[in-house]
Image (cartoon, rainbow over all chains, first blue to last red):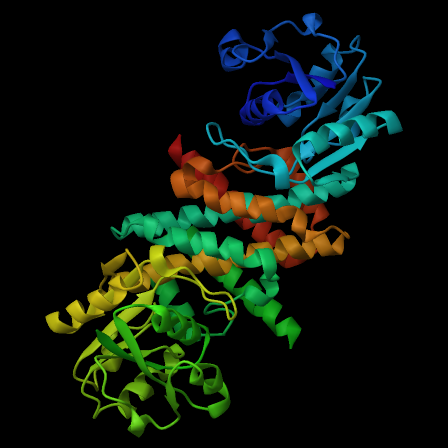
Length: 254
Length: 254
């Protein structure tokens, strides 16, 4: 049995508390947060506190807070004896160097309040400053997912950078699609089956092979017409830059 | 019973032939293409021909060919009496103006050879130059999908433009994610659950509300570090432009 605290009350903290509460082999001892209001959803399933000095001794404390406060949370837990692991893609393990037993427990996924995630297939990137810590995080990860990977801070940062492209930037392209539809009185729902299929397609096919569209086939007439239709300057710039990138990436192949 | 010809042998022609062959209420009379080799996969399910003059009389002939040959295909079918409909997102219905009964039958989806698509939820955008043609295409669309929409040539072009953002450009961002992973010896599979969830998230949540990431939260430190990590100039340009677009779109909201 692995005993666990969670520090933080945001989307990831909620998703982790929810899933660990239901997971065999793990006991969620406590959730610590900055305000009683933010802790109230957790109070139904475990003990909560706003006092970092009142932290319970557990095998692991998972810090699920914003990047820029991880360090200060670590400093508040200097007397805590268990393993402390943060959950950030972009932060080095050493951000917790004030503490003795430290690690990282980074689920490579996007979390939304009110939308529980199936953790089974989510990669969990782990790292620790010692073999015991690594074994513990491996065991903890295995209670949730079949894909627990030992990844260094540098490689995790690279994964996080890639995630910005496939998640944050992709979502902005969806936003532009929605804006164009709204501007012309078209229902954005019409594009949703296409959005889903575009994602599902690359599960089995490399995106390089899956590329289609006017830029891929060098269809200058359509590229020109599309630029004429776009009224917002930033949308035009994005259209041009991404079309040129697709063209260049195809030319390289020849 | 609606009788049907398909003209063309590419991804869309294959998917349409496959699904109409299995659909009640439709009989696939014939597939016409430029070469016997390309027609051979169709020969198992229906009659095929490379001779446009040998076209069978059917209620509808669907033209599923590249945009720039739709016009010339139409001209080859001047003596054909049924309805002729093209399947292009970007082409005006009038590209078929040499013919008498014309229309458009545009399934808003991306098609891959060897990956059959469930048509039930795919929007099919229809248009015709007369009420009889429109009724016929509506009836034909309803045999496949619950989402048959009467959309003008101009609005279809706008949808196609939006589709370029959410499909073609998104796929290129996946390609960049794959390139970054490969460059650092990381498995692109690690990003696939994130890619799927990013798409699934906007089924119920507006992408504007779903936006996360360093640009959204104005995390200058991470934005700077990411640009340092990117070695390819074009990847850096895309990173900068999309991050600035996200920042601007957030500022507008304030």
